[in-house]
Structure formats: C-alpha cells, structure tokens
Length: 282
Image 1 (cartoon, rainbow, N blue to C red):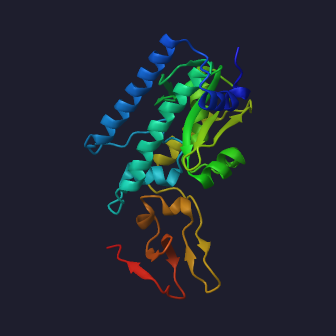
Image 2 (cartoon, rainbow, N blue to C red):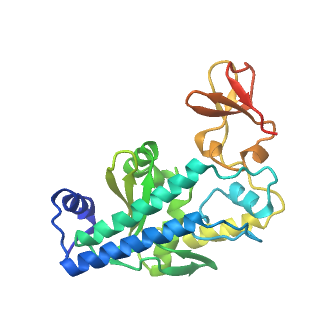
Image 3 (cartoon, helix red, strand yellow):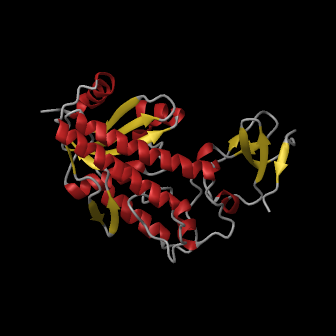
C-alpha cells in the first residue's frame, strides 16, 4: 500500500531506475491513456475558440480575484488578447501534467476520479484526480512560483492569484475528502514537489457564495492588489499579478507601458520619465 507522503520519491525512482511497479500490460495501457490525453489537449489547442455568449463561473476560475471576475462577466472593451507565449505555456502544462499522472500510476500509487465532474453551489468543475485517497491537483510552475507558492507554502498563506486553493477545496468538499494538495513540477528544472493542505477547515461553500454575490453587484469590487513604488523618484508600477491581468488597462485608467530589456513595466504614476521606449496602449 503506497502512501501519498512517499509520492515524489517513488516517481523519481521510476524516472531514474525505470523500475515500474506495474506489469507490461498495465504499462502499455497507461502509455496509451497518456497519449490520448495529450492528443486531446493538442486538438483543443488547435481549435478556433468561439467567444462565449455569456460569462460562466467554473471551478477553474471561481477562486480568481473578484474584481477580475467582475470584469470578465460584465465586459471590458479594453480587454487584452491572451499572448501566444501564455497559450503555449498552458499547452506545455497540460502535456506535462498528463505525463506526471502516468508516472504516478507507474510508481504504484492509486489514482481514481480522473476528470470526475462535480458541482458545488451550482458551480461545475472537473478535477484532476484523487491519489491515495487525497484530492490532488497537478500543476506546472515557473521557478519563482514553484519555490514561493508550492515549496515555501505561499499558496496556503494567500499567495494565490489563480484561485488554486478554492478550486482544490471545492473538489475535496464535493467528494467528502479532508486532505487536498498539489503535485507540482518546476517547468525549468524538472523538480517535483507535493504541497498538502491538511487543514480540516474547508470554506469552499462560503467562498463560492461570496464570489457569486460580488459578481451580482452593479460596480466592481475593490482592486485586487495595490501598485508599488519603483525606485526613489516617486514612480509607481503594477506588481506581477496585475501585470499579467488582461483587464489592467481598464482597471487602472492612465496606465503607461515601458519596454525594458527584461520585459514590460506598467506604470500607474510617472514622476521621472523612464529612459526607454514607451508603448502605445491606444
């Protein structure tokens, strides 16, 4: 009987030694399931996405900051298109997640409820899986997020702009499970980590109700994050969470973008003009 606490070591043993804990027939079955999942992700990636007629709350977005969801629902004529690099990052994540789940089963751990549909307070979602009787969401992360959110536990301290905690809480609530967590891979290094939330407190129902109520208001909720100081001259910029949001231009009137060697900086207030190229936002 495998235990979730040994999951990372067991996966790494399979990767290094190729000592699979399944027979040849099961090995082939798992490979085919993985390939089918990857094929499905590729086909979905290559489909032309039609704009939804109406906004839909789902488990995958229910934990996102309420102001962003409000703009998603009520419209924003300045909304940015999702850039190619981000779409490719999502595709990479889906493929790696399929491979990770294959390795989990090849290491002898029990997986159930793959892509099971559940509903909580009218919100529908499809979970990744249950591993060894624990609700597990499989994620890939860039190095900084991997360390800060999943290794150092920032996700359990509120550093959660994508709403991963409420998503996992909702799935666990629907199945009547207490233990929930994340199996995460560092996309840059291949490192693996398991972050578990063992708290018996699960506020999924109340949090979902609060979000639904906020989205019914005529005005958006308060801003999700404050801007921050940039240097000593009095300039202020958006943090990374706001910088990645596709509603930032609408949310921060007068926003200005400057192109630095390491990427864009979004200025909410300029006292000293940056000596780099400014991009037009019109």
